[in-house]
Amino acid sequence: MLFSHDFFADLDSRDNGFASRDFELNAPPDPPLSMPKPTLLEALATRRLVCDGGMGTQLMLAGLEQGASGEAWNITPPERVLEIQKRYVDARADCIISNTFGASRLMLKRRGGADNLVAINASAARMARDAFGAAN
Image 1: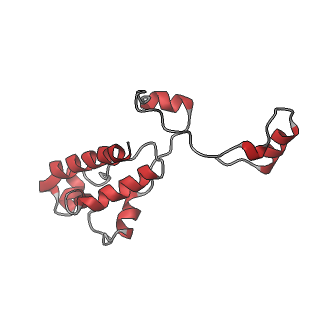
Image 2 (image 1 turned 90 degrees about the horizontal axis):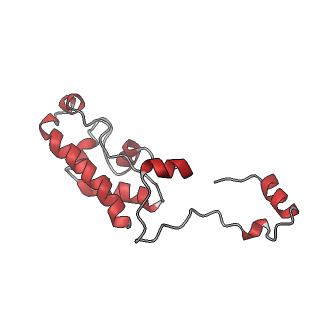
């Protein structure tokens, strides 16, 4: 969260017993393992959530050729997709989206991957869950 200088100046001028240097702008700590995690709707009611970024861009940076199916990487080589998603979790993303943007039957058929529709989508969902599981 970004704060303007004026915000901190206002805090410093108040008689509240603390100055701006006492603020740490870090994300809140993770809840203890014994506490259940809030549902998506509960979390949305209390704060803004941070989501992942562009998976296609990250896949291209990892070596996916332009025009190739990034969704095919969910089954060959899946470790690259999982590693990208783990980095989003490590960056404290609250939610990540499975690598299924073009994983419909129609889109996979265009790239010759329709026969792997179920495997591609199942692997994508499993990796998204695994990325969060590895962080907890």
